Image 1 (cartoon, rainbow, N blue to C red):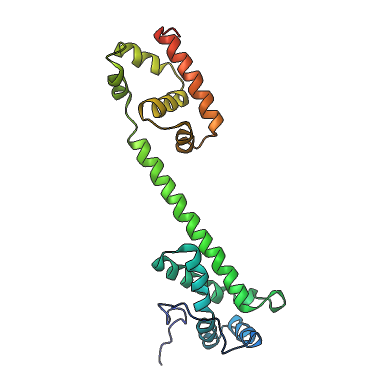
Image 2: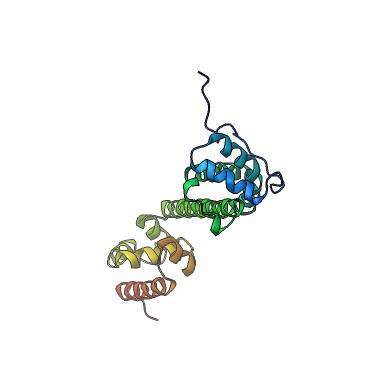
Length: 205
């Protein structure tokens, strides 16, 4: 017996092409109803008709060619798996496929952005100077032990904010983004921390 491969796998790579014109809307609808019953040949026909427009929509959102092809394959797998949920009275097969494509593409972009943001936060935190490094930067002006003791007297959040802003050189907004806190909260913590640090060091305004 000849083994048949999954119709999605038979199209390992898709290329953007013109909108489907070989089949009218009714033809695609009939095919999708056959797909809902597990007809692989019908799905291959649907794939050939809609994969090009789907890739076009995905590329307009994702931009990256390789990722666009990956997302397009995911969309076509979604079509195969969710064919039974398609309702002709709610729109054409092509519009349904393009809606799935746009949703998948947006999810991919958001996922990539979230991953990039996490990596940036980790990198910044990894490069935040230790308290000993902070005290070395001010040892020419104040006694190192006094600075260390006064920094330890701050709350953890106050100490983080002051260290990131004044010894790492970040702006209030960058500190807020790094610590995932509202800008106003960071400003308040920094102000309170600096007041406590000033009082502890005996610095007069």
